[in-house]
Amino acid sequence: MKIGKKKIKMIDLPPKKIRPNVELKHFKKNRLCKVK
Image (tube, rainbow, N blue to C red):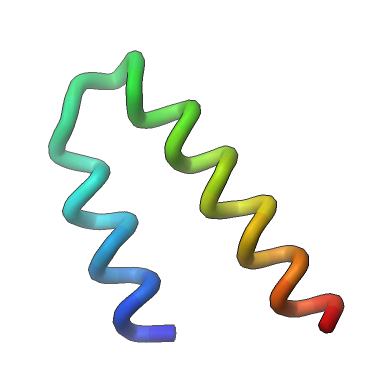
């Protein structure tokens, strides 16, 4: 979980335009992992 947070933080650096897309992708993946 710590690695995932670090990855999201690193991606948080890019522009805001890319941030929403990346955050959504990570959220979907996280939700899938949680459901599993």
